[in-house]
Length: 404
Image (cartoon, rainbow, N blue to C red; front, top):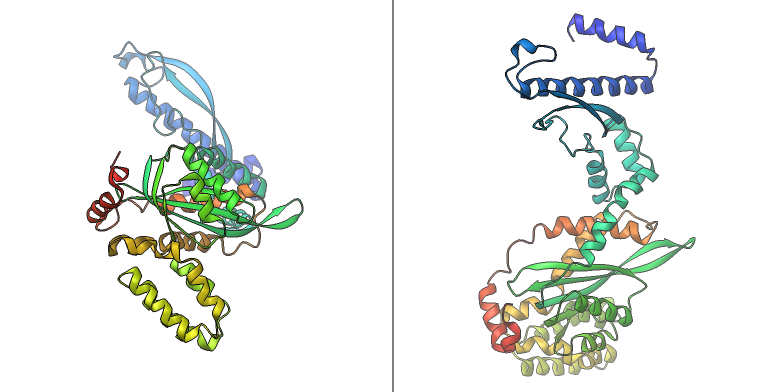
């Protein structure tokens, strides 16, 4: 720092009696306000072409017309400004825009940290260490609560009338409720529209996973304009199929093969898992349903005596597991597993894995929404080979597959 500036700074410190960090912050706040004020005055001088009281160089009919007060948020707290204005209303401040109320972008920083799964305590520490700002848990909550109206609007936005595929799944979290920790299900719907583009249709926080709640989710999609779903890929929840049949009776249902494999191997001995899953692969990789049933007979002959329940679960769920055999390989590859939604769930878990329990449903929803927005930004391109897939869908579904 030049000697003259150093001297002025020391003079200011002595005049203000600065002895601690609070005093430093107060002085920085005052200097920031003064600097912004000087810049705005200089901007208006440039706009009018003459400085204040320099009337001999005035070459415009326009002139200064007083000031109006404005409070903006800064990294040092609220700053009171006195914004100059001109008589013709042509001056537009550039250093602090007309409708700009926050010059620190502190809220954006906090929301970004929150979206990364950073705990409230770590946000407090980060803001203090990096910016010298005291941000307690209450303020973090107030700032992130501004997301809630946006989330409600997103949850209720109109949707496409027809979706080629919709994948439905749930992911579970612990949430504090009435002084205790409750297990909550977050219901997720990921849709692929008739142009082959994926989108998260919604996130809903509810009680533990149930077919009754799923029916409410599906009814909500109908209320938002979804009149038809060609194919739904679902996990193995009991009653799920019935819920879809009520809301969308024409929808083809494909039970997720990966969920079925996990379910049927749950009680298989560890030493047999590798051999048992190897025997399952020819079933779901078979070229036709007839070939798949023949492989299922082989599975039963080899393993039915030792693991009858595991084999019978495939026969019991066969109607929904075999839906994929109706379609050519490109469609089959998309619908036989809820892989896309599983990948999405991994993105959610990556951010939330450090949380023991969320303080409320809203706290959970805010964080999941921020992750969803970040993931959905990358879903800009249609599914590879969508043109051929759409032609196949039109063969199978006729007018229902027509792009609206």
